[in-house]
Image (cartoon, rainbow, N blue to C red):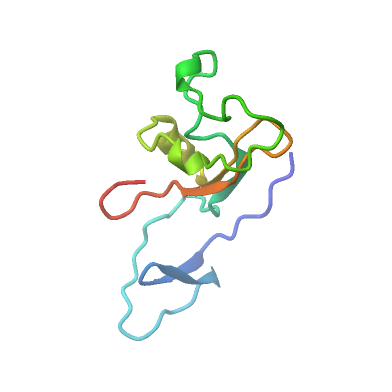
Length: 130
């Protein structure tokens, strides 16, 4: 296994809710607060699950918890919008976020054209909601 080199002693500069600098240690702008929050930790970017049924499937073997496809219809099911079927209370969503998945492109399955894709954000907002 080959791992990229760690950038030890680096600086991550945040302004508001945006990361504006990542790189070698440097002094921040005048009056900026310096905090050491991640000493000894690894910081990685958020990952996107590019083709997922996250929020559409709870327990695959229990049909009542699976909304990944539209029942019936032919090969073209373009009208299926998975956004209406996503279970935002699913205990699987925060687990994915803990593992580094910060967004998911939720895609239905079945048919030649299964439906539209819905992008969901797995990072909680200020209220703790996804």
